[in-house]
Structures are given as C-alpha cells and as structure tokens.
Length: 117
Image (cartoon, rainbow, N blue to C red; front, side, top):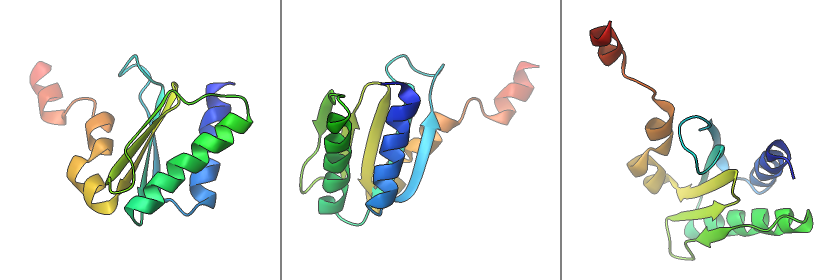
C-alpha cells in the first residue's frame, strides 16, 4: 500500500467518525521513523480509542497490518502506528498541553535565522 493511500484512509475514517481538528503533519526530512503524523481531537477517551480502532480495522481490510496501538480507555492520548503514518488521537486538554503541531511544524525561529546571517 502506498503512503498516500494509507494517509487517505486515515483522513477519511477520521472525518467519517467525527474526529475534530484533523491536522496532517508532513515530517519527511525531519525524522526517519515516519513520513506523516496525523493529529486529531476526540470528544472523550472512548471516542479517541474508537477512532484508532476504526482506522486499524479499515487498513486491515485493505491488507495492511498496523505496527502498534498505545493507549486504552481512560487514556487522554491514543497512538496508532501504521509505519509511514502515525495517528495521535487526543482529548482537547492533552492536545493543548502537548502541542505536537508546534513541536513538529517549526523549523527554526526567525530570530535565530537572523542571527545566523
């Protein structure tokens, strides 16, 4: 399965299952362990767990085996590792606290770039 097809399945399932604030981060060139991270907010611990379960089920139907699933009911963060795509399903509070988009999206602060010139 191509990474684009895998990413499309993830995004479709999250949209169909009412995932909120779906953000896809292209981390190629920033890390060697994955190409994309998808961050999604769920309404509860049960919702974020079910989002990852539905994705895992859908990719298995397409013949792709997920590498791992971390987090369970009661967790405010569930991670689904699909190899080239990693899904981070989080409660709103966890997403605000960890700010993964900020961590992976910033290349270099502008003030550091200006000092380097």
